[in-house]
Length: 88
Image (cartoon, rainbow, N blue to C red):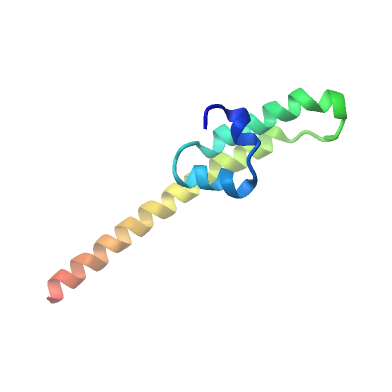
């Protein structure tokens, strides 16, 4: 993807795939969406209540939880591998 504007033109499935491939960070995507809303909303008046801080905070928390979960899974897999080697 060349720009965040290009990323925003994708559907959610394609955006999620970019995140999985680590081609874009979740927070970058959220910030780009916020910038798009701020740019377009004065013309179309679609968003009445802005809760951008909430969305940004949730993205950060969920990213940290995912990192913690991945670290846990990696440690668990290592313990299982060690046990298997001990029993072979």
